[in-house]
Length: 65
Image (cartoon, rainbow, N blue to C red; front, top):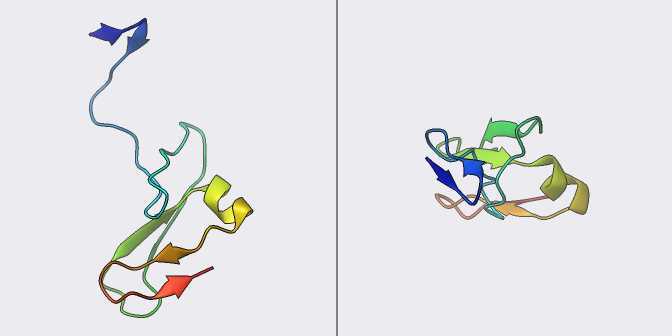
């Protein structure tokens, strides 16, 4: 299946938890548990870390750098 020449393979790529930016195929994202509650898995893209976009845990509301 293709849309405008792009091929679609399975599910969408993982996305940054805060910005919802998809991780590029070769981008090394960081996956970690919330440092406050540990209940939520947070995915951070290299771009969000470089730009200093803060993340927020949806479970406890913790805001990180």
